[in-house]
Length: 411
Image (cartoon, rainbow, N blue to C red):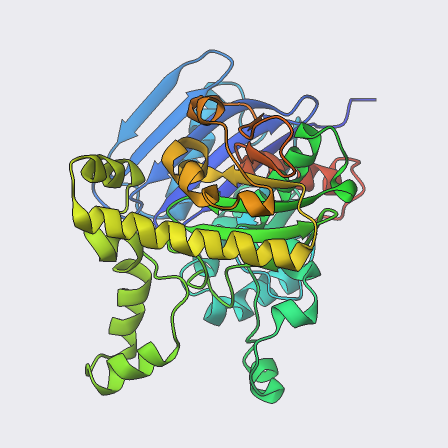
């Protein structure tokens, strides 16, 4: 009897890109990683690395669509002896941004699942269509293989109604699916559990505030391993100041821009999602560049940074109140993991809440989870590198690894 397959291919399909990783779940090791970007353009690029050999290959040239992109990925994997036809491949795990309230856990994909993801397009118009394209293309390449959807929103479905509901007439909220869904859920799930391990405790024993700070940014309050509040809402626009998104603002700003500014809904959408946040405030959404400009005395960059930090502090304080007892605050993602000045500024002045960072520990650069708070502080402050691909692979393999999960009806 042949051993059960142990490999999982993780696909993250964007509107013009596909990120992928192939993992062996016996030890969670990565066998290959890669990225196809600028799909549909003449300047498409595929960058592939085989971790076993260390070889990295790059191909430039037009890749017409996601089907062509995934076929190119399959060819690169085959060159390394890791092809999609391998009997060692157990499943393909797909990142899906929006699962609404219907999907609360990883799900084997069939026609009904695809239809529900499609019905959610109005609340995720930039993401779910690309996710669907990646799924359908992968199904065509391996129709016999379990395809699993892992939803960004699923981790947040444990929020109580008092946190998830907006204060509007329920008949309109229910009719148009308006509620707080939250995003970056795979990251918040992974980091909250990793933080508990760092403290030598189980997730059920700890309360954690997770700060996922990248170009997109979100915060979550996690009590005993379950999300009880998060900063993003119906869409990823709400909450923290982000690279190009405004985060929280008075909803009447939209009415004002339409009535007084004469702007269309599409123009306002573009303004708030793509031309606001750090970029809108100072013309840069790269925190490294903003810090460089601050060091040179740039006042616009300084103000943008101060607004960013002010919003971050507000959420830390709010989630301390929501949780009642906080065991740790964990910084993650590109800015959270690498920008020591952000971490220092975010907790400065919050000593009354039990928060502080040690300047020397905070300055250390490392790839492993680590504490940056002084010994003896009431609340641990941690830097925990996120690993969304591993989280997707872990959830996928937990669902199909026994070989008992059904293959969806992909006809």
